[in-house]
Image (cartoon, rainbow, N blue to C red; front, side, top):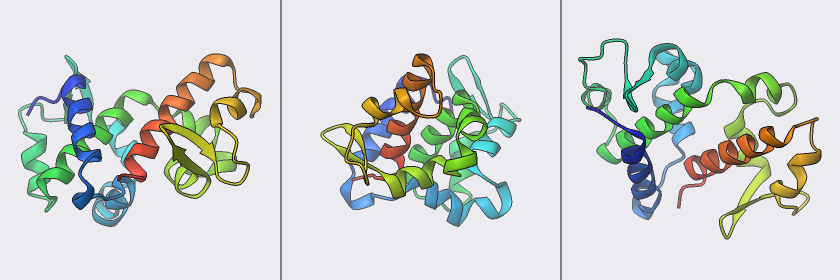
Length: 162
């Protein structure tokens, strides 16, 4: 199955709108996949590639969607997990390198310390928008701030699914 960025965005949006099937994608990975495959980001960056805007595994002829179906994921979970893995494959390990010393994992940070209001991220304890807070946090440069706002917004959509 070829999964390009436009399809990833459409699939993720559709999955995020599905109230009946809401699930924290990172917990899903931790519960069903991590024992054999490790952390999702590490797995994605080590074993998956994006070629011609499509997510592919080591064996490009293998259908990733079918492979995941054989791993007992539901169809709506498969599309959402593939979208998450696509994003992790393309975003690199910047959070781990720059932030994990204080914040451990990005999904955990979002679950515990970030809330989404009207499409904007806020710190739970401070109540301040992250867009206002991040430019003065941890020596981040302006391009870092944009990257991390995008990253944390994506993770918030994956973790705090409706």
